[in-house]
Length: 132
Image (cartoon, rainbow, N blue to C red; front, side, top):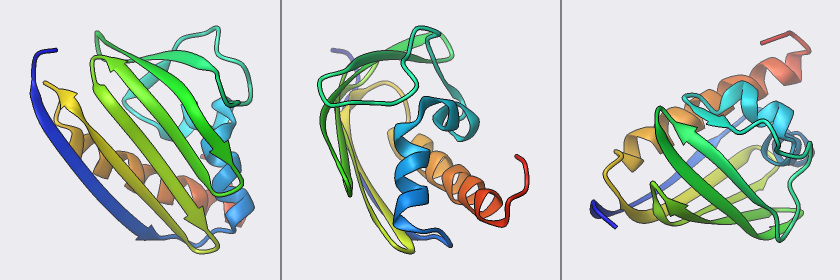
């Protein structure tokens, strides 16, 4: 794999319940709304499940995700192709934490920061009942 080893750990306070955060992370229709500029392939099921493999793209760079762990407060995906590493999500009422480590040419810290801010905005809009 070409690239350099990168790691990023971020935690944000959000105005959302644990259940709303989980729904935004495990339902692909919601992921598609806030996870920009990453696009998932069309054949992705509506809900993520442990053992599922799915593909996404950042521009022309493919990223394969393998859902290794999925429970009430944790989502861990092993990444390959454009990023060789993993992405972990932990959450609870009013907070979300993301940990991303891998080898890639992509700027992982920047992408993770943009994604978390986009998720926070999405959750705020979902909580108020407005449309994105």
